[in-house]
Length: 105
Image (cartoon, rainbow, N blue to C red):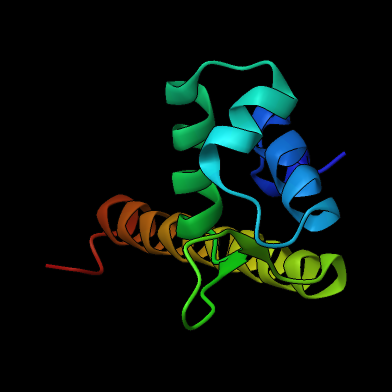
């Protein structure tokens, strides 16, 4: 469901599990998910990179931000990436236009 927004199916499954069990530890995630520890840790790192996990004082457990806020963050990241690609295309078009019309020399 969230793959188009940059979240692979393993990371999405881990995110959903953390939402269902706030404060869950990595070893419990491994047990509940049936994945190997390395896969769970990679998914957690991806979720952290996407800022879908939050820290809580005095807790080693994992806590996910709300799905609504998570969607906002993922959409904003995709929009930023799209804007970056758009700028590169525009710059390339300007450069090609200058070269084709000798406007840059």
